[in-house]
Amino acid sequence: MGLELQIRGVAIDCDDISELANFYSRVTDQPIFFQSDDFACLNLATYWLTFQHVDHYVAPTWPASTSPKQFHLEIWTDDIDGAEKIVLEYGATKSADQPSPDDSWRVYVDPAGHPFCLTKNVPDPATS
Image (cartoon, rainbow, N blue to C red; front, side, top):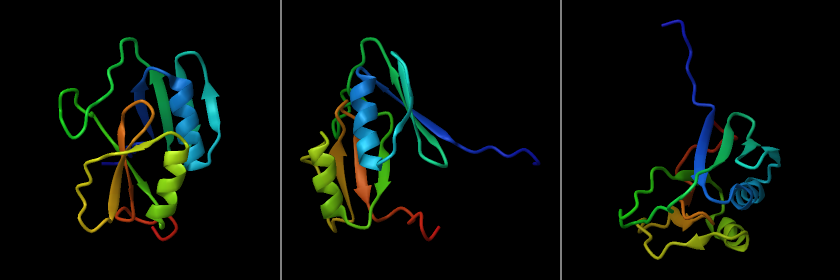
C-alpha cells in the first residue's frame, strides 16, 4: 500500500475535562501535556489520550445500554490488586458487574462515567 496509517490518539468526551484529565494523569503517572477550557491532552509516548468538553454530556451506563458506553480503555498492569487500590484512590469506582470469572481483568468506572478495565490480558509493553 505504501501509505502507513496508525491510531496515535483517542479522544474522550466528558463534562469536566480537568477532572478527567487529572484522573488519567494520575493513573498513568504522565503529566497533562496541554489544557484549555475545552480540551486537555496526555502525551503517552506512542499516542495521545485527549479529553474534550461536550455540552450536555450524558455519562454512559454499563452494563445496561440506556446510554451506550461508546468505548472503554484496557489498562495493562502486572498487579491488578495494587492497581485497583490506586484507581479507587484517584476517583474511580469498581463496577458491581465483573464479567471475568478468573479475575484476569476487572471493570471500573472513571469520574466521568466511562467504563475501563485493569487487565493482564493485553500485551505487556515491556515485552511487545
